Image 1 (spheres, rainbow, N blue to C red):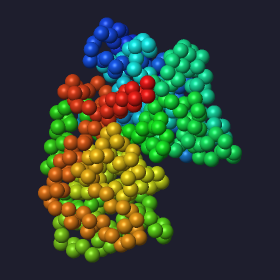
Image 2 (cartoon, rainbow, N blue to C red):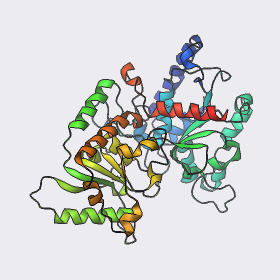
Image 3 (tube, rainbow, N blue to C red):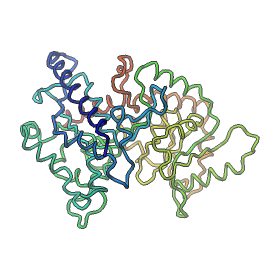
Image 4 (cartoon, rainbow, N blue to C red):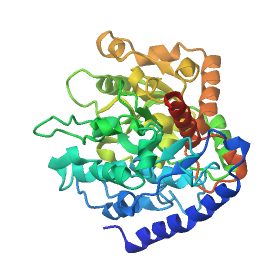
Length: 435
C-alpha cells in the first residue's frame, strides 16, 4: 500500500488548491481571452482518482508505482540539486495532467459555460486491477462505475451533448482499453473504449489505434520538467553545444530472437560496425544502450548522456509501434529515425505535425532494412552535414512541444506551450468540430 502520508498530502493539495482557482475564474468569467475556451473540471468521488493511488504497489507483475507519486506524479528528483530532472513513470500521466490542468487560466465552475468538460478519472491506474489484479476476468466492467456516476449525478452535464464535450487522459496505449465486449473468454485489455456510451468522449492516450475517432495520442512524459524559462534555455544551450561523437544510437531492448525483425537488424548492424571500427577512432558509427528487462526505466542518466552524444536516435517499433524513447531523444536534440509511420507520424499530429516530419526526422522503411539489405549507416551518412545541423535545430524547436513542464512554473515558461497546453488546444478544437 502507498504510505498514508503520501496519499494524505495529495488529498490536501487537491482539496485546498482547487477551490481558490474556481473562485478566481468566477471573478474573471467575462475575460474575452477565454471565449470558447472555458473548461469545467467534473467533480468526481475520490474513488475515481486519489483513492486509486493507494493501490500503487498492489500489482506484483508491474512496477511499484508508489515511489513515483512524488512531486504530483513527476517522481523523485534524479539527484538532490537538480531543478528539472525527475524519475518519471509515464503511467502517472493522469496525475501529472490533473495537477497541471488546475493551472489552466480558463476554468469555470459552471458546466453550462464550458466548451469542454475534463474528467479527472485515473483510467490507466484503475485498469491495473483488470489487467493484473483480482478483477482480471471482469475487464468488460471497466468504466461501469464511472458511467453510472455520470448518468446519475447531475446527469444533464453528460447528456446535454451526449458526452461529445467530455475528455479524459488514459495513460496507457489505447489497445489496453480495447478488448471487444463479446470476447469470451476475455483476452488482454479492458473494454472501456469499446463501450458504446463512451464512443463520443475524447480519450488522450499514450498510443492511439488507427481508426477510432475518439482517441488522440499525446507524448509520453520524459524525465525533463523545467520550472522556469532560464532552465529550459540552459538545457537547450547544452544540447546545442554537445559534441556528437556517434553517428547513431539505439537505446532499447529486444532484437535477440532469430526471426527477422527491425530490432534484430539494428543489433546486427551495430555489432558489425563496432567490431570493424578501429580502436584509435575517437568517434564511432553506432552506439547501443541495452535497456532490456526495464533497466533504463526511471534512470534517465543511463540513456540521456549517450543520446546527447549521438546525431541520430533509432526508434524502431517494439511490442507496440510507439516508444517513450522518441521523446527522450528529442529532449536530447537527437534526430529521430523512424522505421514505420505508426511510431509517431500517424500518432502525435497535434504535437509533431505530420507535414513537418521531414524537417526534423528521417524515415527508413523497416522492410528495406530487414529484407532488402539497406544499411541504416549508409542512409544516415549520405545526409549532408549542413542538413543534419538544420534538422537538429528543428528538433530543438520541437522540444518545448513534447515536454511536460513542472507545475507551478514561472510566467516566462508558461508562455511557451508545452505538451499539456497543446493537448488542451487540440481537445478544444476537436470538440468544437463535433459540437
